[in-house]
Image (cartoon, rainbow, N blue to C red; front, side):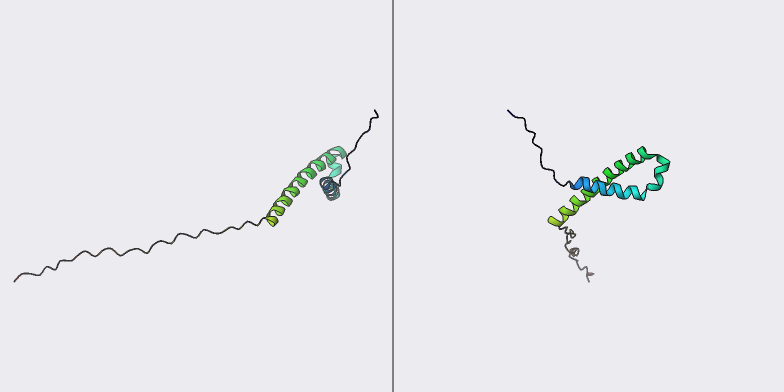
Length: 100
């Protein structure tokens, strides 16, 4: 039998393209620190920062997507109306008249 390697079709990976875009922007913005850290350390730090940033963006996108698809209605609970306070019962007042 002939050995054939089956390679899956490559999809445009949003995560890697976003990661590359963030990496490029960070490297241009922080290029002044490259000399102080050195080339290798600078690249490692950018890579870590890019991963963390991509995670945050993905979480925010999921929250945004969820909020758009299923709006959550929050109703404020109204305090229960209390029955009006009853007037105290009037006691039968005995009229005491002096006897003559």
